[in-house]
Length: 441
Image (cartoon, rainbow, N blue to C red; front, side):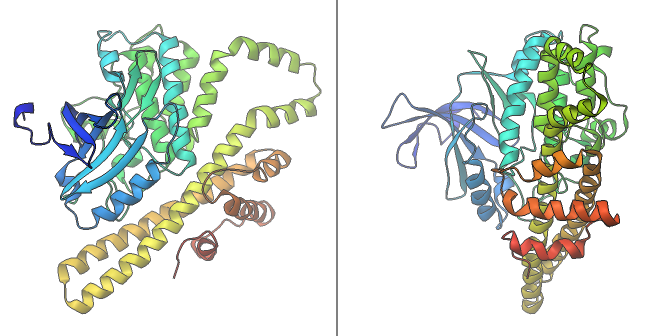
C-alpha cells in the first residue's frame, strides 16, 4: 500500500497523536512515524497490529494484559512503550521513536564480512541487558532478531517488538495455527511447541544474533519454514569460525554454548550469557586473579570459586526455577478457566466451542507436565553448587515477581531432594500455587 492510499496517514488518534507517515511493516503489523500535536518535538513509533492477530474474540483481554506488563519495561536498552489502546478493530502500541538503524541493516552494510568482534560484543551486551530486565519481570521477547534491534547514532542499542500477539491459551500462534516468530532465530523448543518455552529460548535467539554479527550471515538458512526448522532441530551446533576465521576461539565457544539444542545445556539466563562475555573482555584481569588464586589452599580456592564464579549461575538457576513454577501455576489457572468454558459450551450445546476448549485443555496439561519436568531438573542441578553459598543466595532479596514467596519453596524442595532424593511432583507443587496468588480451584 502506498502512503497516499493509507487512511491512517494524516489522521489524529487518541486526541493528540498525529500519524505522519509509514516507517515499515513487520510480522506483527505496520509501523508509523507520529508526533504529539501538543508537543511537536515529541515523536513516536506507532505500531498497528495485523487483523489476523486480533480478530479472535479472546485477543482483547490478552492484548491489554500483555501490554500492561510490557509498559513496565523501563530500561536503557529497551524501546519504551508509552501507551496502548484499541479504536474499533485497530489495536495500537505507542512507542518511543528511535533515530537510528536496525541491526540487520548494519550487518548488511558490511557486505557479508560481519562486524568487528569488539563492536559485536558491545551490541550483544546491550541486547542481553535489555532481555535480562524483561526476564526479571517474567516477560519473554519471543522474537529476538537483528531487525528487532535498533542501533542509535551514538551506538546505544534498543530492543523493540516484544511479543504481544498471543492467544488466550498462552501460545504464540494465530487463530489459524501460524507460528509467530522468525524460524531462522527461533529456538528448537519454540519451533516444536511455542507454548512451552521459557527465557532460555530468548538466550538461544540472542546467540543466533551474535553469530550473525560475527559471521555476516545466519547459521541456518533455507527456502521454506520447514527447511529452516529441520536445520534448527537436527543440524550440529554451528561454529562462527567456520565462516569467519578471525573470530576468537573463546568467543566462538560463547556462541556455541548459547546455541545448544537443549535449554539445559545453554546459558541459564541472559545475565549468565552477559557475564561470560564480560569475563572474556576482562580476560587480562582474570588471568591475574587466577594466578593470585594459585597461592590459596585447596579449600579456599573452592570457597572463592563458589562465591565469585558460581553466584551468578545460582541466581540464574533460581530465576529459571521461579519461571518454571510460575508457568506451572499459570497453566493450572488457564486449565480451570478453560474447564469452565468447556462446561458452559457443553451446557449450551456449542460443539465447536467445546472442541476449542478441549484442545486448550490438552495444551494446558502438556505445558504443566513440561513445567514440572523443567522445575525438577533445576532443583536437581542445584546440588552441583556449594551448599552454603546456595543457601545464602536463596535468602537474598529479589525484585522478581513472587520471588519472596518462591524462594522458601525452592529451598524446601532442594533440601528434601538432598536428604531423600525425592523430587517435586505435580501433586506437591499445585497446593503452593494458591499461596503465590494463583487461583487453583
